Amino acid sequence: MAFIAAVAVAGAAIAAGAAVEWQSEDLLVLAVLAGFAVFTVRFDVSLFYQSRVSVTVVPILVAATIAGLPGVLVIALTAELAAYLGSGKPIYKSIFNAGALLVSGAAYLLVLQSFPFGSEGYVWPGLLYAAIAGTLTNFLVNSVLVSFVIALTSEHTVVAVWKKNYSSLPQHYLVLGVLVAAMATSYQSSGLATMAVIFAPVIVIRFGMQLQQAHKELLIAHREVTGAKKGLELAYDGTVRSLMTALDNRDNETGGHSERVADLSMSIAEELGIESGTPTWDEIRRGALLHDVGKISVPDSILLKEGSLSDDEWELMRRHPQVGFEIISGVEVLSNVAKIVLSHHEKFDGTGYPVGSAGDEIPLGARIFSVADAFDAMISDRPYRKATTIAEALKEISRCRGTQFDPQIVDAFLRVRERMSSVNSPRLAGSGHSLQPSQAV
Image (cartoon, rainbow, N blue to C red; front, side):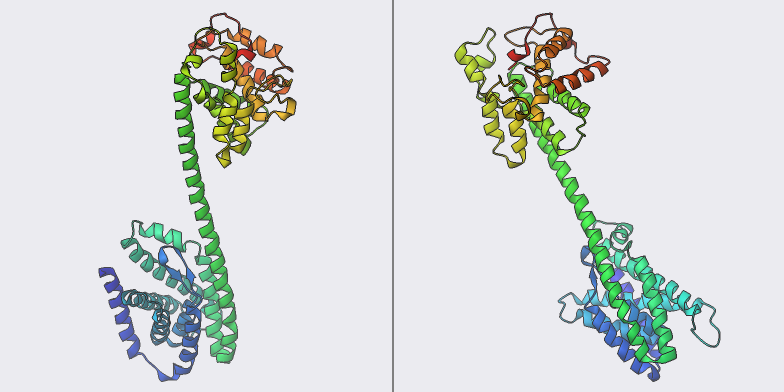
């Protein structure tokens, strides 16, 4: 409130000085400009933090050019009174706004009077340069005052408030400065009628300001929504990874089977030209992470059995893709991921389960995943058998090219393996026991 009071006192001092300079011969033009000001108040542009900007500055500065401080006083107070009536805003806000208009109007006059005009007064083109400089100064003073009072009542700095609200507006005020000079010159040379005609572009500029502000707000909103979306995706992925880690631990997987398969699947996908961050890439990654979620339905007595599974136990184990599909398909945004989960044990020749899909009937993500999953399964220890070596696993993957696996996917996988310079996990050395990829569940 102290800052508001200081601005109000400064405005009152300027008003007192204006009263001393009052000349009655300017009454008619001030009345016309006051009418313009009341009209333009209805067309101000909303900014952030409930602040606003208006082309009312044009009649204020034209009045300043023609009538000096008295012109600023009459038009500024008329405009603020018109804005206050019926607005319901607190009176102290209008007092501050009036003070800011008077202070910034006086700043315009100081700049205008600093130019070396001769005895003929404000003439073109000198008035053009002076009006542009004065209008930009008026804008800077007024916007800084408003930004300062907003910053005092928010958690933002003056600079942050100014940049967010006003940084896109100087070019508009430059054009307004041209119109101020044109209107003042036309009045001095041809009277009120010509000045009124020039006022029309002011309204056009106002709509340009509104469109630019709307565009700026949309960009900011887009950035905020994008940031929120990324935050949700990170939270979602973290939840998925925690769930799959719990399932891997239950299944006695070491080192994170789902994570390894997901990483290898993404390497294969990128080798096939699927770009990171695209919807297809995300679906494959999530499908790889969630592929075994259906094992929730498999009892520990079967999942952790050290010996061979009976036919009935195998039948129950083979239901986990369908169960996983039923769990995930209830989430609309995961509908394509659910199809990958359902099909991750399908074979390229149609002999897989649970549907028996073949070739391109199998989702691309599932075809990629099946190679990555089979490879990781073969080189990993399971309760019912030991791991095979990497060399034997690669040989088996190649042997099943065109039968169990999509040939294109196998070729991409082998290229990925060739580029791997080292093996990160000591488990990958294996123990030499063989295992066909079709045995991986």
